[in-house]
Length: 399
Image 1 (cartoon, rainbow, N blue to C red):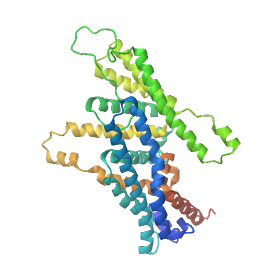
Image 2: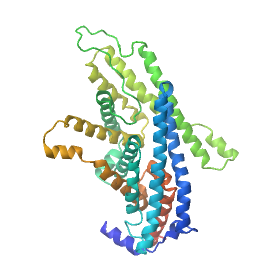
Image 3: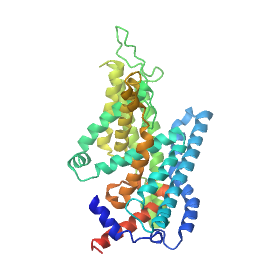
Image 4: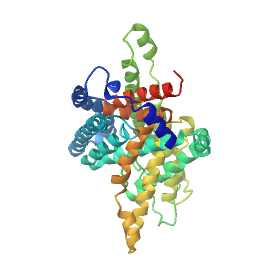
C-alpha cells in the first residue's frame, strides 16, 4: 500500500477536476449533480420498491403502501444528498490542497458523504448497510488468495455455504421474527409436539393440499422473478440503438431469476411438507432442514450477488441472536460491546473503502457495486476510475 501511495502521488496527483468532468467547470459539475443525481437514484431504486409492492400482492394494505412510499422517498432524498456531497467534496479537496492525493480523491469524500444515509428511515439504512457489506464481501472473494479462490472457484463449496446461510436466515425469521429481504417468508408450523400420536400428514396448511401449497409458492415467486427478468431485458435493450436487428436479438426473454426464485421456494415447501408428513423430526428441526435443502437451488442457478447477500444476512442474523441472548447480561464490558453502534462506524468506512477499491482495482468489484456507485454519483465514480486507470497505465509505461 505504501508503494502504491507513492506511485499515486507521483503520477496521479497531476490530474485536476477538469480531467474527470471534461468540458465543464466544478461549479457546473455540482449543478449537474444536483439535477441528475436524484434522477439516477430514482432509476436505480424505483424497480426495487415496485417489487416490494408486487411482493405484497393481495395482502397489500394502505399502511403497507404508505410505509413503502415513505421509505422510497427517504431513500431517494438520502442517496441523492450522499452522491451530490461526494461529488462536491471531491472538487473541494482539489481547491484546498491544489492537487488530488490517494485518499482525498474519493475515499474521504465517500466517507464523509456516507454519513448522510443516517438521515434515512431505519428500513432504508438497513438496506443500505446490507448492500455495502455485500459489496465488501464481493471484493474479498475476488482477491487472489487461497480462501477466495477456493470459495469463488467451487460451486459445491458455495452451495454448502448457501444452504447453511439459508437455514440460518429462515430460522431467524421464524424464531425471532427478524426483518430483512429474503427469497421467501418462513412457513408456519402448526404441528403440535405435545401430542403423543403424530398423524402422518402435514397440517401446516389446513386449507390446502401439499401439492397446491407448493404450486402456489412456486407460481407466486416465479412471477416475482419474472418481473426482475423483464426489467433486466428492458435494461439491455435501452443500452443499444432501437434497430430491428437489436430488437430481434433482444426480444427473447432470458429467464433466470424466475426459475431461481421458484426452484428455491419449491424445494423449501416440498421438503418441509414431506418432513412434516412423515414426522422425520420435531417441527422446528423440520423447518431448519427444509430451509437448508432449499439452498440446493444455488447449485443449479449460481448467482454470486445472491450468495453474498445470503452470507451477509446470515452473519447479521447470528449477531442479532447473540444480542438477544446476551441482553440480560450484567457484565459491563459485554453490555458495552453489545450496545456499541457498530453501524455508525463501519458503514461509512466500508462504503468509502469499496468506492476506493473500485477506482484503483476495478477488477475486484462486481456489476452490482458498479451500478450502485454510478447511480449515487451519476456515473462520476466511473469517470474517475477510467482516468485513474489510464494514468496508472501511462505511469507503468503500458501506454
